[in-house]
Length: 118
Image 1 (cartoon, rainbow, N blue to C red):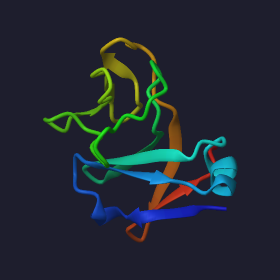
Image 2: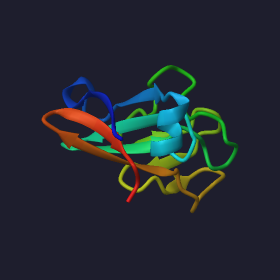
Image 3: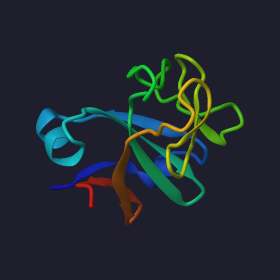
Image 4: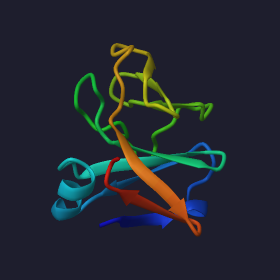
């Protein structure tokens, strides 16, 4: 089972988009977690569970606003933690060293798909 999330070109470079999975999709594709997001950096798209490792709160307090102002890192709106885009590791804030839970996303024919983890 895979879930098509969106078109890759619908996500501008340096921005993200959140999604809420149906429970059966979440169970098969995201370890039971329904709230996820993807971010784009250049031609690459990365997927994560939408939950801060410090408090468990969603990262975006405004819909689809996942990035720092300079668009170089993922931002937790609750307490300002900053995470690297490529691996989700916290590099600034109260949870330095912790990481977002990464999801397996692939792009095929300009479509972003969530797939079971490897």
